[in-house]
Length: 182
Image 1: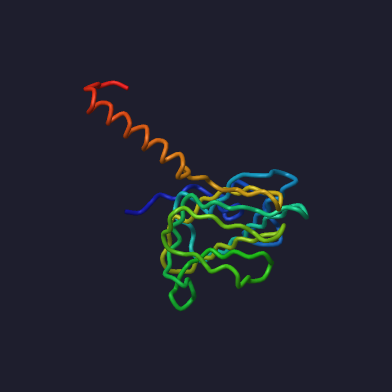
Image 2: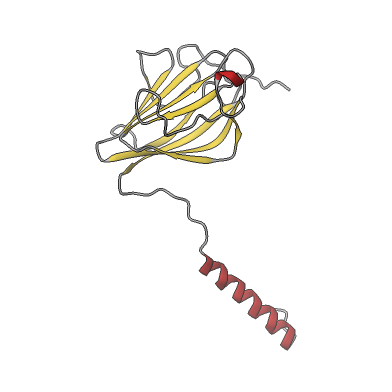
């Protein structure tokens, strides 16, 4: 089944966040002094992304900041290691304008994941080839002070133990005393 594409122009690629950078055909800038958090997506998301397209997303923080990205949805056609040999579309991350060997390319269908920059500047590049296509990605970003952590905390073992102990005590009292309510 083919998804209907959203209406977009070749000028903005259906990307509605960030400030479009005139030096590139498809580039968007996100400055922490303009907004500290928001969202960004691949061209035409949630429709199919266009073929033969390269888009850059530049994140510029203050000297003491870094950027945290959370990918909520990721469907970029390809097979690991997401190289030309596998004819894969991909998303690439870098702390520089050039390629950064620290980060591997991402492609395929992936569950939610996070990426953190090491510096105040971070680049995300989306590149599609002339073959198959996908829905792309939808992500959020937040600029953090270097000392801040941005993590989703799972329940601690202590909280789980307390819940289990409470349930066990309730069940034990029901069995011993025949009570049906706590």
